[in-house]
Image (cartoon, rainbow, N blue to C red; front, top):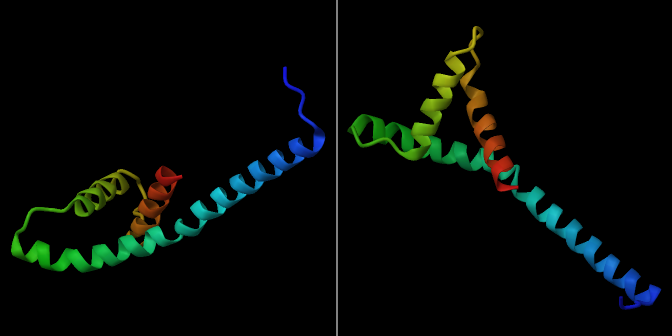
Amino acid sequence: MVAVDPATRRRVLRVVIVSLLLDLISFTFILPLFPKLLEFYRDREAPELILKGAPRTFLQQVLGGLNAYKSSFSRPIDSRYDIVLLGGALGSLFS
């Protein structure tokens, strides 16, 4: 076993802690952006594609599945929470 002096050990520990803290902060900054990004793309693509009869996009398929899931509950869930639920799920997958 290699002996490491305490000063070197403290420096290494400090670098590891700062790296972990910066990593945590960098992931946390992007998480609030997911709902706004989803809302932007939902509003941008939904009206034109449905009227033209184009194939459904992945976002529309996911939101359709989410609506089917919500309809299985006895109380209806307001559609304004769709983006929040999907943004939270994407944030969980991302981190």
